[in-house]
Image (tube, rainbow over all chains, first blue to last red; front, top):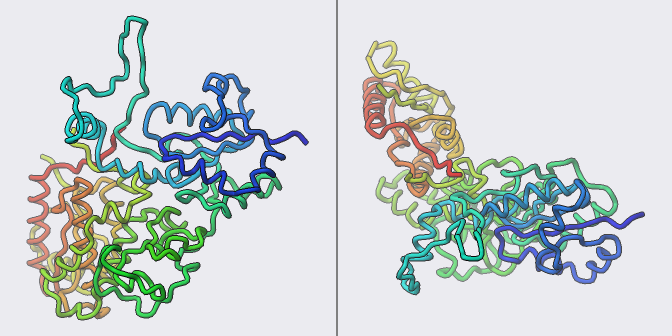
Length: 324
Length: 136
């Protein structure tokens, strides 16, 4: 049998997903035995024009990580889609927009103004901001367009599989690779992770299903036994997909939702508003005045940023209303 | 003239009956609200509210029983907390929180119900059509 042809690409990402591929340790040797890597910008010097020269569907499996932030990312998404038999959205950013997706509370002008003009550490007397074209004596230079809105991969092209996580765990990557090599991939459009909520694999104990107050993680030292929500820490495990092995929780940190919503949930943030508000301050709720309810809810400092931390671009509203 | 669209989620036991009473009493109020009957105001998930906005509603009204009168004992307390948190989040999304309104109307308060819908329609008229952030 011919070796499979793999490709890896990074769009708007931090590079963590690239490292995650290596986190499968010596299993990487099996991968190299069964597959050739034909494109991997972080490790191999293969240019975009080489990819353009590939025949359509030349690549067997393409792992695409990172969100769509610029026109370059979008172009590469379309190109790799055309050249790949199977396109996998790899990691939270490609699946849901991820942390870069939080920039959807802002837009291009706001970001350029802040980064290139307003920050105290910036010295930019000519107020130069990135231009898409520039006429230099040597000829015209171009840069990709910076979009107002960050998107997930499936919002710009057809995606075959989703492998969520920030980054996906070595166990999930191994399972996905095994399924690819053995030809046992589930139906197109599947997420290559369990369908249950994280609470199913969480080792902590639920006692009351009530939250008396909300604290930020630095204000509480969790006791390592009881559900973090019951200890007043906002944990998103209740509607986040399982599959990570509750790593953050085992390190005494709450789930932040990088595996994305469970299959039944469309809008992760809205569902969390519902869940958290329903169990917060249940004790004595019949005696609470409107002011007290507001003070209680005000303990949640940044609902949008907390509840949509990884999924803003795929939420119902997708972004903040633009002032233009 | 611009006519705002309001989706009204009315609880079966109090507010829907209030709307009914407003009707049978022939109290006049704007026809901008489309009523959806739910068993309890706490049935309304924030996702329903967002879906209403995304599908073109300019405002969403949630109406339930007065505190202490919930048919399911404590549903409306949960509704209130969800509503407060929801408004806070809508503001972060750049949507005027006045587009979401929570009111308590008992089944005897047909007049109050009509007044709430009238007020809300007028308020939305001054706010204008809803704008959501499409971007590029």
